[in-house]
Length: 512
Image (cartoon, helix red, strand yellow):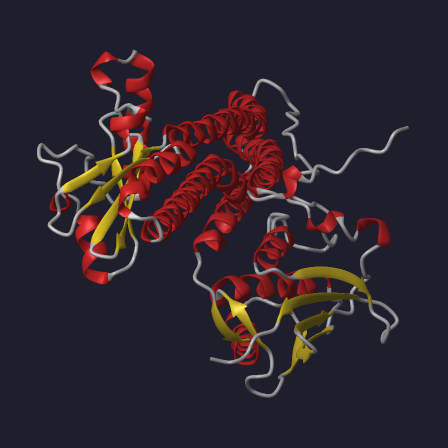
């Protein structure tokens, strides 16, 4: 059998997965934009550096060349560099222009005569410049009167005595690089429309666009995969929840998705646990309803029989007996209905109860005093080993805890022999508070120690008065104790020949 591969993607929280998928395209786009901007800036710097050197070299050559030979030298330099070289005199007038001998070495193209794809490329150029916040360039326009004062870089070069560069945009958004350098009292100006620069940038942009398209496709595939990992299990959980709601199937298996530790896995296990708890509660309600019906039928049948007999019986003594039976049945029904009501609302009241620190010492002491003075306990005796104050403190509902302990004491008294002693003790043991209730009765058989906590458990002492117990007391006690995150069990006493020992264990807390 092959081992199941670990679902590492299912271990990541959904927030991280969604964030990663959404950021993927954005990060790649940002990386591409930054790369292209850095590449363009670096290439522009290289072009400016190159024309700067050409201007310095041209100025040096012209400075060493006699005036009659400058035109031929200027023509040779223009052919070798491909730039348009102009020489301006000390008054700023144009003295030499390489284009007069070589003709134009570059052409400024009119964008209105170009195809639509060039317009699209220029639109992308403008969008990219706006995206990176590039500083707008001046438009390159040939002056109507060609003189040095028409070129800002020429004026700066004459003022500073150093070569000055500048870049402008041609009408079709291709760059025009220019550089001016002083030649004694004169100034040389080089200009070139570097269309190769634009082609290189657009080629890089095309490559990045392809990469971005691949990234978008990848992001879409990842998004679909992410949606699949989210939607499919949610659909399974929703379908199972729908079946639970319809209640047509007795057992509805909600997928628990044990391989996933993300939010969906937690949701699946929570819904599964909830459905199991709901199913168990529904089963308990059905069983409880069936038990209530069964328990109510017996006293009602007895009561009907007694009342029917009253109409037919003439013997006064027999009538008195039938009336006594009817009264006992009424008492039994009253007690039974009260206990049923108590059992039915125990869980709901515990769910709404506000737990507070409860010191069980004085609470149990007051309960024992109530049994001694106001309750029917026969000739049984109660003894309580009261703990030190604020040592047996638990977090809970005092009234509910009193009801649980009272039910167990009531059970212990009912099984105690004549003159028997019921011992009660409470103490803190580590992080727990343990309440022990011992009686001197016959004890509880091992096979019945779990059954006695079931509702309507009917094994009672033979001499007990009819209708005194409904069989719900211990079931209510267990529900209350478990509602306080505690446990209750029963064992035989180890310090007496016979008797049962009920132990309630509750989490301890500090006194308020």
